[in-house]
Length: 222
Image (cartoon, rainbow, N blue to C red; front, side, top):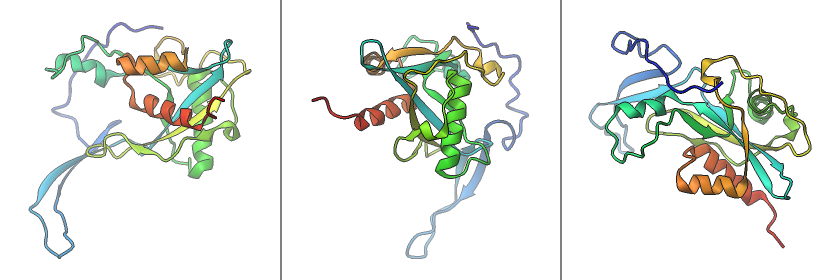
């Protein structure tokens, strides 16, 4: 199902508590403790947390008919990006950003511990969002996690990849959320995705970082 707009029914920002909801904002007064024992003046910081701290993103790849690799991407509804249209943008790009093209991703659950838990969650997200049944042992990690916006958000993203060449996919099950009302996933060649990132058609950082890291793992052409 494709969505063409998101309608605001109520803006209850003025009455909502900042420590409840999907995003929780901690508003703190802090000061720096220096190595010489002195302290800085007290200042305020805001820290944004999610109910579960970190996330995993998975680059799903396969060998295409022409022999090169293809990457699976999804068009995800992203309200925060969409509502940029209501703000004065320093450099307008003329796009709505209702959907953002990204790789498979999801939050790590409370019982996803260590690399074993990370790979288990990655495999579950691939099944749920891409429609491919893979085992945790099929998942490979792509280096260390990274912060999204460390000045504001506590979340780190762990990057993984999985090769589904020769496997049959099914329609993604999804999780039933209205935010998953989106077109079916699609396959892009690596070169096509690189070009889309370079042109700004794809503006998702985790997709670019995952693709770049994965390409460095491939053997150099002879």
